[in-house]
Image 1 (cartoon, rainbow, N blue to C red):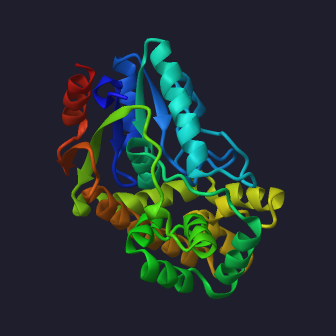
Image 2 (image 1 turned 120 degrees about the vertical axis):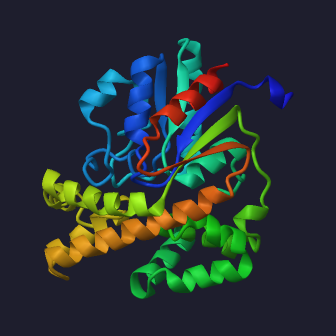
Length: 306
């Protein structure tokens, strides 16, 4: 296939708290577009506050795909994301609209734009053994094992327990790390804009973001989820959810949970900077701080439509 004949799809990404959702909504008020979410947590129903999910009114104003796709106890893999995202992109193009991929899950965006490694089907028994290690010893022993075999895969999993377990499951079964498996060719080409806020601008906003989540009812949201899913499925291991769950189970105080969420959010944002710094393909970085990012985003999007 001639890759140059593939449609070019715009992608708006960057670290958490950089303003991706609001900027996408502003674009949606000016252009006939539909947002294709590339956020690994927003796919779960009922996980709204802790994921900073767009409100129902915002989703009615600008069409969104890949939000509220599965329940927290249902599996959802990167291959599921690729399948649904490419379907949404194709459907949006057929409707005469522009699909705009928006989100900060770098692994999803990389797989969508570069192609997904064609891995064997999961083996639940091997994964169960690995999850047992995570529960008893944490992720560090498994990270070290993966780092020794494949530093590339260790970077790719970004300390995400689910991706780590999947990568090691493949490695232990086949003797080959996931990064060495062939890739399936992507169905589209992508032009990416990476928001690149100054850390001095972003860091205080991350703490305010956490405070806002508590004010909106994060504790009550997690309480309801734990009542519905007492076994704490993988989805609820995300930042904000696991810390509040620990508080609700009496492991530490609410203030300690809040501080842990702020710390984890900062660490996650720093990992995103590291990840996107090496983003392949057609990539534009948009530094911003006190100056608003909107003019640069608008100019980039207009150029992407040409």
